[in-house]
Length: 76
Image (tube, rainbow, N blue to C red):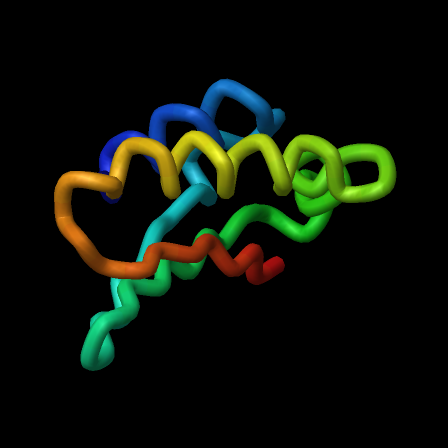
């Protein structure tokens, strides 16, 4: 799942070398903290958050088999 977030994010940004994903696991929740270059934050978020929402939807759909809640937080 971490690789999925990384591949999608690297395809969107101008500075793919600055993309990193940190995984934080809590009881029944997995949080993927996506860090990007400050200039690329807008590209990952998109107009009115559409790209961020689509990214979260893809990750949530892929995580159905884990039976845990999954979310993506975007850090810049």
